[in-house]
Image (cartoon, rainbow, N blue to C red; front, side):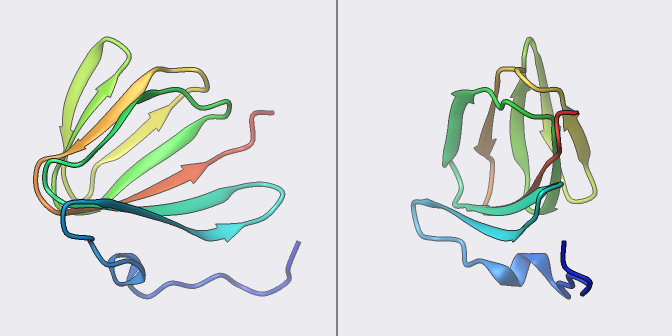
Length: 107
């Protein structure tokens, strides 16, 4: 593990929202967690999938429609969502959006 701090002054500035597309970029990774920033143009989505580890979604910019198992929610900047490992989920951008995904250790 590094003894240096990881510091991002503006998560949204770490990615450009691609026209008619989705972009993801790993911002930080160590043996304990992984941070991935996603940029979605309006209407773009991550289709239903599961993750093998718990994860936290934070909306940085825009609005996202989330399906979390049998629940649905609209998430805006400031929203915080924790998903357990194995939960089927999908994400659709209602407008150009930036999302931070933190993947946590399963143990």
